[in-house]
Length: 417
Image (tube, rainbow, N blue to C red; front, side):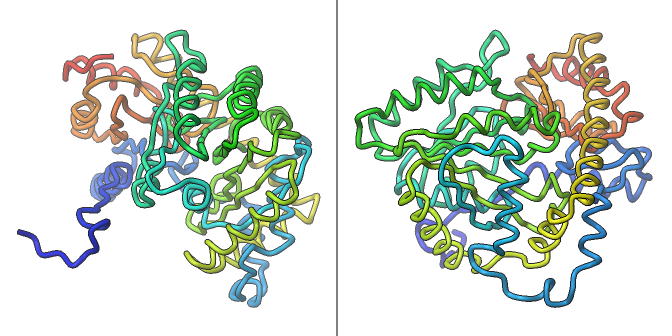
């Protein structure tokens, strides 16, 4: 028997992350054979056409310009006021919803999800998200004594499966005081799928109806990690307007991160942004989430907040930021278009992709397919129901011909699509 001194709720915990595991193997092989001999489709970060990790130039310059005090000072627990203002403006743009809007700094988008689960659900509660989701959602729930529950995101018609969503929400509202819903849209990880404007209208009308006249609450968490690579800047933000003037028992908490839009992946800087028609709820939001930050990681990364805020104070720098994002959005789209065209030509099925860092190839037997591809120096991420390809990190040259190689691996292993 393995000796353990862990508390009962911690016994047996371990985390073998398939994404980082596959990436580590790809990196090690590239160092041995040369980067040109390896296709690494695991990395959830933007790499340029030469395989270099992208840091936006305007962000790099902002870090270089920081004063020693901006780099090392303790920041306020809630976050610097100029950072919080910048976060709200960068997130919503011209589509700021009506209502009381407050923000709290967090340790990346992950920090937002931790705080929402911790403060807006009870021990033993279900947390709802889609069947296609970032794997860490489950770990966050389990580590907080909650259970992740999944609705079917995409129906047989390739559109948002509202019927499945509705069924799960109704059941949860009947059983729980609060129903927390994590909706990773636009540019869903791992599919690149997104709810349409009409989908959001349908969802919000239903949520208002399902808690009308009840002492029950909905906590809706749009996880918008990939927002800045999901479409034209103004167009892709229009859905935010729909979150204004909702009933008091529907609280929207947007999970915002600087990891992707500002290429600050390892700086772990994000913010939770609440939208509510009730001032008391907004004030409570700040109070309880500040408290949890203090009790979890204390205060956040000063340098990252100041770099982001300093960019956003300068219209010229914001224009440069927008131009750089648009360039990489276009590059990712070119890569995705190559893959989808070739997948259609060779009969490889993939889930509906609109934008974002990833495309998913649905199948049973994903691990066997990924294992076979690794023998050809191709590294992808096996999921429970498919294989994830990071189009954000694979060059156009390397993505050309990749669909046919995946198709061959599917056939060779007998995987079912």
